[in-house]
Image 1: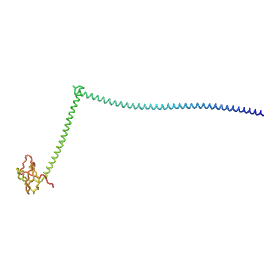
Image 2 (image 1 turned 90 degrees about the vertical axis):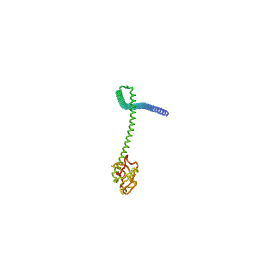
Image 3 (image 1 turned 120 degrees about the horizontal axis):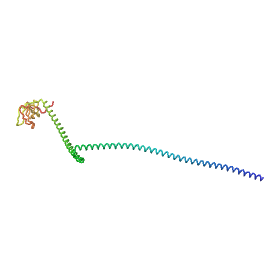
Image 4 (image 1 turned 30 degrees about the vertical axis):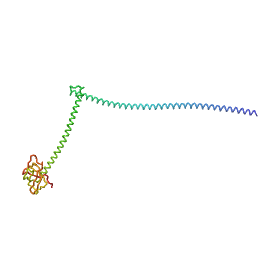
Length: 265
């Protein structure tokens, strides 16, 4: 019985050892496979890292290329702008040169004309001659301004005289019209040179009034003025208005009188 148990125990031990060996072999195989997979994973991870680094480098190169391209375009645009600006500057300088050349030609022409006008004058003396000419010009300008002032004054005076002539002409025309329209007329019958009065052959019945003033005339020529001092029906006495007699005029019997102011209807 013990022998059987012993045999069974040995068999169990052997079986357990065999089973343990199989398990160990399988475990070792799995460990080996796992290590192999880990190694492959490590290699793959490194490859991924390397590729990512390569990608980063490529992207950096791409960005650098883009930046370089942008810089090149910017330089091109700047060069174009500088070229245009240089063109404009060249045009400005050309205009300045042309203007300077024109001034130089003008100066040369003026110097030639000066030499022709003043053959005995050296160029160095030209400023002095020019100053003298300027002084003469200023003097003439001043005289011209003074003449203009005198001219303006004369023009104003002529205007005033014309206005006065027109005014006097209007008065003469008015007086002439008044005289022509004056239908009253009477004759001087007697004159007192000593007392400066005269007698008129017309009175109240002829339309005279106590305040009437008359013009004395002979042949259409005005001799003087008289004012009624005494009025009767058919005659009147009038006094000569002081200062009204024309130079050298002497009123005589037979001279005619008319109203100074015609009564309006």
